[in-house]
Amino acid sequence: MQSIQANNYPIHFNEKAYEALNNHLKENKYSNIFIIVDSNTNEFCLPNFLPYLETDLTIEIIEFEAGEENKNIDTCVEIWNVLTELGADRKTLIINLGGGVVTDLGGFVSSTFKRGVDFIHIPTTLLSMVDASVGGKNGVDLGNLKNQIGVINVPIMVLIDTQYLETVPQNEMRSGLAEMLKHGLIYDKKYWEQFLDLKEIDFADFDQLIYRSVEIKNEIVTQDPTEKNIRKSLNFGHTLGHAIESYFLENKDKTTLLHGEAIAVGMILESYISLKKDLISNDEYFEIKSSLKTIYDDIIFDENDIKPILELLIHDKKNEYGAIKFALIEGIGKIKINQSVENELILNAFEDYKS
Image (tube, rainbow, N blue to C red; front, side):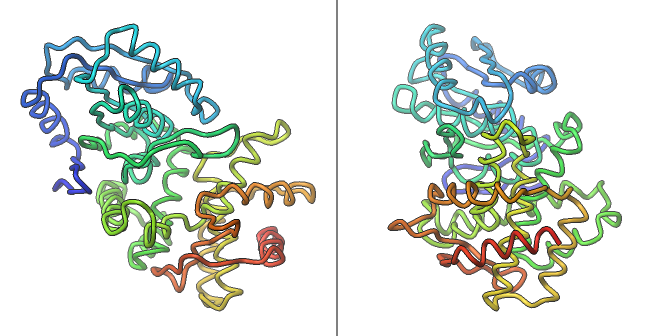
């Protein structure tokens, strides 16, 4: 597959990825290499990756415990300390090998250590391939509030090797699929339609679906790297989805949701809001709701859940001057950003979701 040129960095695929990595190592004089992994990728992905690495440089592995609950500043401090103790300097290269938590946190650690060292993302989950590692967003959570602390800073390159997906469980694959579906809903109707009957998808062609998803996100980000305009479209499903994800993360009585599971609910809710604002038709809403509910299990919301979820919306990063702003779809394949939505409509969306 042909490499994709993003804003100041390339995205390489499969066998071309390692060739590009090793050429880069030959052409640049790094002092050492640090590979950041979590407890999952250390076990399942690192043994596959290391044989591809052609270098005489010292390689150090830094592992942290897997899970969104560890994507915080405390983990960063631990890693910064390890980097310091093991002799990392301004000429260090950091390779982030893992899912979205690893690439988000590893990119932030790299961007801030000694005011920034070179880093490369190697995403190993579907979600991180099509979303987290593309676009230069790096950061950590603040308590249960997602991605509140971070920077926009691009890697040297992103390497996507779809062989790593063989290590990913089905629920994580479904989680990543949510972002691919979102890319169709906001930007490419024909792409969305390819997923309407999952039984018909030839998974031998799945690499091409991943490629197109990366391409869509990159086309949007290239137009608006710092999220002043069209990049806000990527937040469709995320305004309510992130609030739901945060609420389930902090609530001991709830089962923590994967990112894509929460975003799938968010897309249904925000499609309902789009319907009620006359931005999509009844048929389009039914198609979206029924398709997503076929793939994702229903999430149960109690009466007492809704108010704290709405309170979490106050912290959404798209908010301006204290007002909550949504990105809503205007027909499948188009988006309308900076939309204000009254609370009553959000409550009605939750009621409709239950039906």
